[in-house]
Structure formats: C-alpha cells, structure tokens
Length: 375
Image 1 (cartoon, one colour):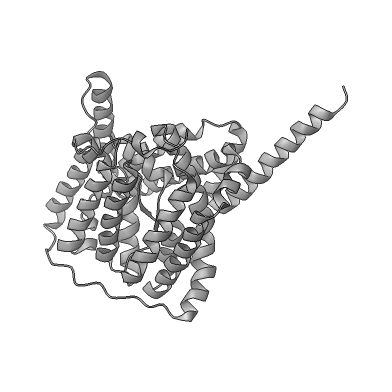
Image 2: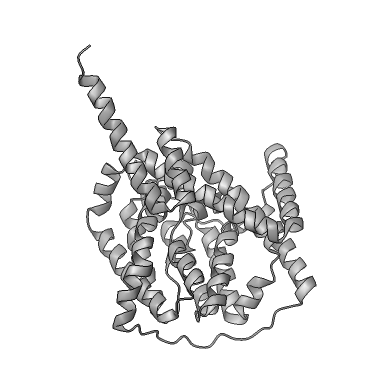
C-alpha cells in the first residue's frame, strides 16, 4: 500500500524500545572500534554523527530504521589501514551518488527488474555473514557468548509464555559492560574537542573511487536500500520507497563525513536486530542516538567500546541472524535465494547479486520456452 505519514506509529519511549535500540550494537560497535584502532579516524566523531542521525532518522521515519557503518568501506579500511582523507573522499562520492539516485527513477527501474528471490538472497547472505561474525566472538570469548545466549533464550521464553517484555538486549549489554569494568576498570571521562574539517586531496578521490566506492555501491543498493525497504514491509506493513532511503543515505554522508563522520547507511540486518529485541517505533532510534552522543561527548570512545565483553556481542548477532534468515526464506525461488546467499558469504555481495540475477533471468527464460513449446 502507498506510504502514508499518518499511518506511521507515534513514537514510544518504553523499555521495549530501549531494549530494541541496542539490537544493532553487536554490528556497529565492533566495526567502529576496529576502524578506530587501525586508522586515524576518531571514533568519537563517528559516534557523535551516528547519534545525531539516529535521532533524526527516528523522528523522520517514526520507525526503527537503523544506521550502520558502510560495511564494505569498513572492512577494506580495517584490512588496509586507509586514512581519514580517503575515507572522507569515499563518503562524499557515495553521498552524491545516493542523493542523485534518490531524486531520479533509478530505484523504480531497479525494483521492476531485480527479482525478489535475489533481494531475499542478499538478506540470506547477510544472515550468514552475521553468523560468521558471531563465530569469531565465540572463539575469543566463549563463556560470555554462552551466557548471552542463555539470557536471550530465557527472555524469549518469558516474553512468549508470560507476556514479559523482551529486555534481553539491555541485560546482555549490561552484563558485558559490568564484566569489562570488573576486568579493566572504569574508562576515563573527557570532553570531545570541536570537530575539524577533513579536506580530501584530488588523489584521494581517485583512489577512494576504485578502492572503496565501487565495492560499496552494490552492497548499499541491495542491502541498505532494497532489502531494508522489503523488510520494512514484512515487519511493519509500511511501504517506504527505496528512493527515500537513498536520499537520507546521501544527505547524512555529505553532511557528516567532512567533519569526521564515517560513511553510513541503513541496513536490513540492523532493522531485523532492532525489531528482534523490541523496537517498534522511532523511539528506539532516539534512545540509540542519545547513547551514542553521550559516549562521544564524555568518553574516550575506543576505550569505552573495548571494555565490553565481546562474547555478548556475538550472542546478539546470532539472534539477529536468525531473524534475518527467517524473513529471507519468504521467497518465490528458494534455490536462487540460497545460491545468492551462499555466494554472498563465500565470495562477496556483488558476486552473489550478479550470479543471482543471471540465474533468475535464466530460470524465467526457460519457463517461457517450456510454455511456448509445442506439446
């Protein structure tokens, strides 16, 4: 059905929304921490702009539409120790691309020509990637991983059979923080300095386009925009056009990245995570935004983030992956969806998308040939 601003839910600020606001922390925190540790990016500015845009997104959409670091950019930065100037150049290029795409008919064409089975395959691939990421946390911190799993499972049963709100995300994060403080002590408190303008050089734009932008574009179109739009329909029966997501992605990158922000986008995995742990309105985004802003303004963020017992983050990722996988199998071709998802895991989202498109159109062509063939 067409989107209606009046049909969107009012903001709520209860414990369920607070729990849901933490549902994507298992993805955001490890990526921000890793990027800050291997590059000259200041995590405090990254968290500050995440907080600001989380609040603005919640107020605008009135749904728990998440924000995440652009994963392809983050992974390449972590692997190659790329500097802040090149990251800023990539963010500006991506901001322009998605702002322009949001004002054209591009996504109307994409929705018409990209089969649902391929988009569901990208969702499945993301679920599998979340499972793989959680495995790394299991190896590093098995005790708190199992404790996190037990807490989430108990709250799931209580919510299902005793109508108790699922506050597992709050409890799991609290356990991780308490354990980290017990081991490493309280982090230092310090005010954030004023942000400085990051001015990329012409060479940074050339390098960023080839190294960071091209791998990210396909992932953003498929997961951050198309898959998020589809999952919004699944979870909330709300038809938010992909071009609207593209526009907000473009705006927040153009405004934030030059002042130390990290390239960011929406994400189907984040939406599944926030929904899984109780988020139903944009109130969850406001909670998440306030948490990030407080961390950015008053704490040395990498030290704060690093004290969390990583096993509990892995536990959160497992159940987010299950939520994502559950929706990905609602497809018109399970074979194509599975192949796309597996290739996204073992190779890349781009390869999975291309192969899925070829298979989907080949299957459609063969079906038409059989229909016109003489009996």
